Every structure is written in structure tokens, then in C-alpha cells.
Image 1 (cartoon, rainbow, N blue to C red):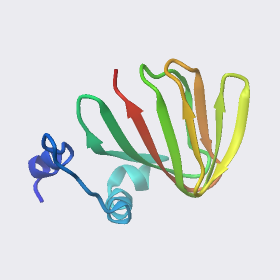
Image 2: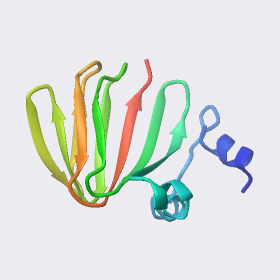
Image 3: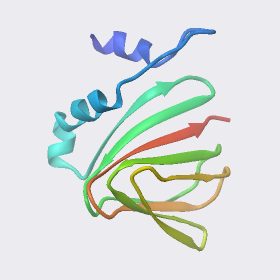
Image 4: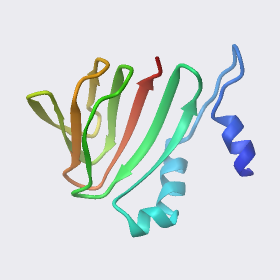
Length: 124
């Protein structure tokens, strides 16, 4: 699949459906240079005007510093474990866990071990 075909596949057609094999995408990310040389790698699996589904791989110790998002988010831990902090609350989330936040809530994340997460963002 060419880069352009892949970009178009990210956007389901009106009334259409899109499916993605997450294990294939994890393998594809791990084969990229940014994974071997950095502490994270990410790719949007679905992206349109209202929704972004981002697959992110994090090496142990990788951090997403405090930030806010314009829209509400949900984060699903696919593998590994992370410490997710929002406002003054922190939780350790492991594979199978999901956390959600309203828009504009200050939050941060640290990978406690190598982890794969799905970050689902409503774009407002």
C-alpha cells in the first residue's frame, strides 16, 4: 500500500466502515527508525473531521508531559502499563484498562514498561 493509499484508508467514506489490524500496525511501527532511536512511535489509525484514533508505542520511562486537549479523550492500554495523571489524581493502568477525560483537563502519562495505547480524541 502506498503512502497516499494508506492516508486515504484512514478516512472511512461517508456511511462506510474501516477496519484495522492493530497487531499489524504495532509491527509496522516497531520497524520504523523512530522506534529504534527514540522513546516512542505513533500513527493515526483513523482520522477525520470529528475523530482521531492514534496508536502509540512507548518505551519504559517515556513521558507525555502535562498538556490539555481541545476535545474529550479516551485512552485504552493495549499492552504494558502506564501511570496516567489528570489534575491531582494518578492511576496505574495496565493492559485492558481504559481512562477517559473531558476536554481541556490537564493530564500527563508515563510508561511504566514498554506499552501500546490507543488514544481516541474527539475533534471539536
